[in-house]
Length: 431
Image 1 (tube, rainbow, N blue to C red):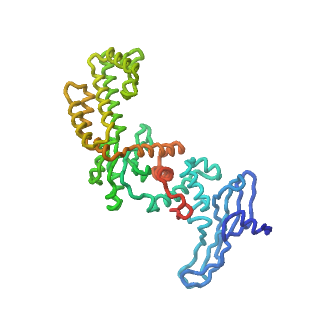
Image 2: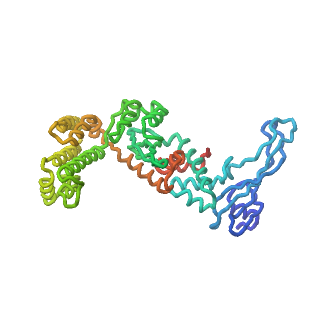
Image 3: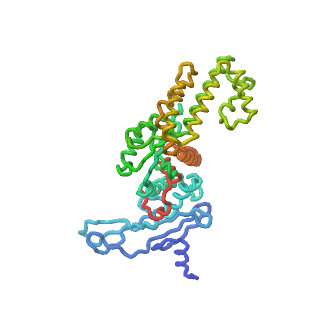
């Protein structure tokens, strides 16, 4: 058991090569611990002569709480000067990375702790700032500095990718007119990892990100998943022409359902002259129309047929429903060659002039994306992991109550969804 008072103070402080000079305990204020480095007198790096203390400056650093109280380290920093008057070194200020990195307003251990709290556990910056009794910007600047070093300086974080997914994400609404600002997610679909976030949803930013990767890394990519977005198709066509593009089945069926709903609403207005009301047949069957055929029991099927007879005199909604079910049936097997023939035949059939306009639009979509739709049967990869990353990023947005600074948004999203190697946090150098 240690009984020396000086040694006890050093143990409680938990910092090597540091001497506790005193403690200022004022009610209602953070506990101020005055320290100085206990290292020996340094040697000039130019002429190898000993140095002397020129002056001292007091630097205030936010530290981890102690016994439920905020703490400030008051570091008496010495400024050294070479004893050789002709030395070009002049003077320099002592540094101790165990205490704090240069130009940081928080101790090194506190900086690493807040980075893990905000990035890994998705705590709000304001909540962590209240724990430490400091300003919001103190925490945010620290998280960005350590976070950049953790996610951007780790060459092993982005490994070999065989399936790359692209998807847009709403960043925030800007200005009085609430203009939508977007970001684009790049996701390793096989591993379910967020590779990066880039600003905007045009071809420019994701193309630039891919151009910055090595050719050997891009050659390993076999599949590119997308959600029937022409922008992301253009990115894959230009930057990764060798890959197989895969249209996400969920979005294909979702589009079929949306066309079915458009047809139902148009027929509703044409037949009764107003939007759907609870007594209207087409409005009453709106949920039954979106259900899979095999999930309808005998009573449900009878109800659907009866309501369509009552509210769909020309059979347009029934045709759209059958088209939706035909597209769903496309995913009941895994034969890529058969799927391509199916899509071509179905697309040509749905384009007939006697079909409703929404069904014709659906047929044109099938023919335009036939290769990407059929590719799923070979690749068996979807955009599901990309949508998962979107949900994780939305959790970060909720914790922050929104974000307008893309740098902050990107770092916090990558810390949470990018699977950084958290064991490196104790060794990274903030930047």
